[in-house]
Length: 154
Image 1 (cartoon, rainbow, N blue to C red):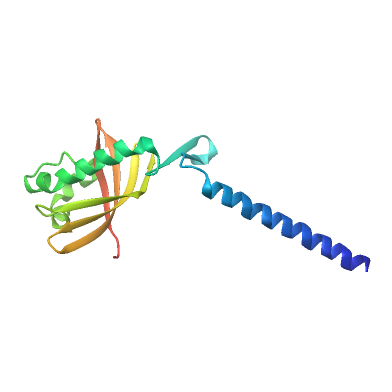
Image 2: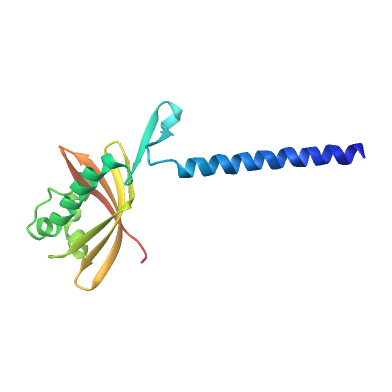
């Protein structure tokens, strides 16, 4: 009988720990939008992860929309103002996605930014062929620049 009671207490203690972990996770999931602090390389410093739900990120998302709105014309005229250094030599490949008059719809719910680097999912529509892309952008020389593009399966 004593062994059975001991097992029951261990079971109850384990159950209570599990409930505490689930409740703690629910509280974190329901907290208002705020930067998430992540340990930096080697745990030496913290990095803030900002999301599209934060009011302070809306102007940045708007600036990225403006850059992506100009991208088809920039590519058609041979300008690379909208591109970060790694993509300046890939204008021809990018022009295949951002054809003249293409529209880019950025999904603010997917916006993630740490410092001067951000990622976001967007849909590029040129004629009737929408392409979903994962974009990496960097803030350089006072403006956002497209640093990487990865096509996603739609």
